[in-house]
Amino acid sequence: APALEPKPADAKALAPASAKKEALFKVIVMGWKRHASLARLLRSLQAAEYAGDAIDLDIRIDGGSGEDRDKSIAVAKAAEWPFGTKQVLINDKNEGLAAAWFKGWVPPSDDHRAMFLEDDIEVSPFWYKWVQLMYKAYGDKPWMAGVTLQHQTLNTRTGGQTHIKNDYTPFGYKLLGSWGFSPHPKHWREFIKIDPKKHDPHVPGLITSSWFKQVKKGSMWTQHFIWYTEKHNLFTIYLTPGDKLSMAANYREKGEHYQSSQGKDFTLVTHWDPKWDNPPATPNLYGWDCKLVPEPIALPPAPALEPKPADAKALAPASAKKEALFKVIVMGWKRHASLARLLRSLQAAEYAGDAIDLDIRIDGGSGEDRDKSIAVAKAAEWPFGTKQVLINDKNEGLAAAWFKGWVPPSDDHRAMFLEDDIEVSPFWYKWVQLMYKAYGDKPWMAGVTLQHQTLNTRTGGQTHIKNDYTPFGYKLLGSWGFSPHPKHWREFIKIDPKKHDPHVPGLITSSWFKQVKKGSMWTQHFIWYTEKHNLFTIYLTPGDKLSMAANYREKGEHYQSSQGKDFTLVTHWDPKWDNPPATPNLYGWDCKLVPEPIALPPAPALEPK
Image 1 (tube, rainbow, N blue to C red):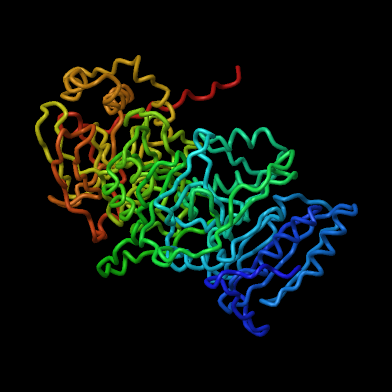
Image 2: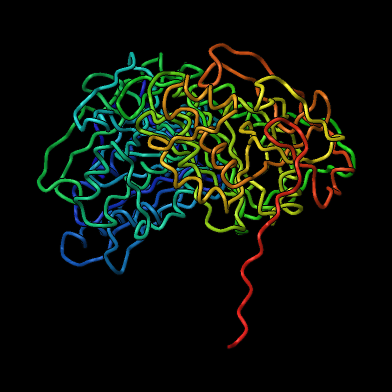
């Protein structure tokens, strides 16, 4: 490398690292045939400050042939690197840029760092100082996807340019910046497990998704990371150091990104601004549309439960490889604190080692409260099975969430629907599975509820069915934690609630249905279905003030104003529940005992004539 011009006093090169010092930082340079560009990048790396740290350097040259590639190899081999170990990795065959990213680095630990640089980049002398400062400030933030040297310009929603200046201080933006990108090791380790040849990384509403469809399959690796970012609600740390300044300049040369050379985009930072030494504890975060969004709420771990009796020990979470026959469907919108409370209670429950999948459905709309709900949903940990966050583009309402939430794959599958103002007992799953084992083959079983029964459906008043605190069947479903029988649910959801008249004579719910917005009270349709097929939902009154689920009755579709928590959660398992009666007591719409429905046997096979 030629002798560099004298640098300003505040950018003096520090002593190179000891060769014996372990390197926790690796620079990965990706090149092919742009040998002059590669030489320029390497000179800028040699001129940077590393504060005496050991920095390893990998230079990857893609496969192929030709004089330009041979010159790139020569430049790579000749480059001096006194800061740590240097490797030149030469591919036998041409694999492309995406493969260089996916294969370039496997983080040995969460303490290791890396910086990926394509060969038409040039870096500021302060690039390393900036990256390390950002990891120190934000490396433990669960939403941090990594740090970029790129000057942000793209609005990922519109495809136009929106420069986020943020008072020239660090900020987070949903889109990664690949022109000098240091991915967070925790996320990179998971991301590179994706097979880009098989994975569909489409993210609705982003210009990059449109671009991805137009390019050669497998070449645009960034779209896969965009998908990963959206799935996990991550943000990349940027800095706009000045209107025309950047921590890295891209010469935008002819190659995979540009059909013809476009020239240098920004001027490199050559003076360090002291205000960067004190980044804010929480930086401003910007969504795909370059508008401010709230910091994702990291769902805190469930609080330690009081010591439970021996028969209620928490069991180990399910194996990731075990097929899940049970799905929990959580329905939310703008009650983010309520959603967080429900998710904590689900995390704290017992699942007996079973695999349990979780779908969190957030209805459409806008506003900070909904954004916070989305953040809560995405941040929630779920070690018991697969978690999906399903976000509606438009507002469909609660009824649609029930009708569309689950299509039973078989009669062996189960589900639990939970609205976001519910909180569940640690024993909810044990209770539901026990009831399916006891009564799942009963033709009259509509499902199992966690709700504490109170309503007399004939009078509209309250009639508490205690039934000696043992399981019983009641004609009315309990929607505050409802697990519908898959056989009946599969048939029920064929109903079109916009066209169906669910009136059942003599029931208070039929009167309520006439008073509400058409299509909003989905439960009346199930009440009609229950009456038609003479079904009963399994309940338990575990105590006068106890329930397997508590409803906080918050303002929303059911209540005009918040009413507060209705019952106290069951925290101790009663051994008598382990032995439910072979035939439980069944109660009609008026809360009076009725006989068990007689199942008509199938017609016998005819004797041969």
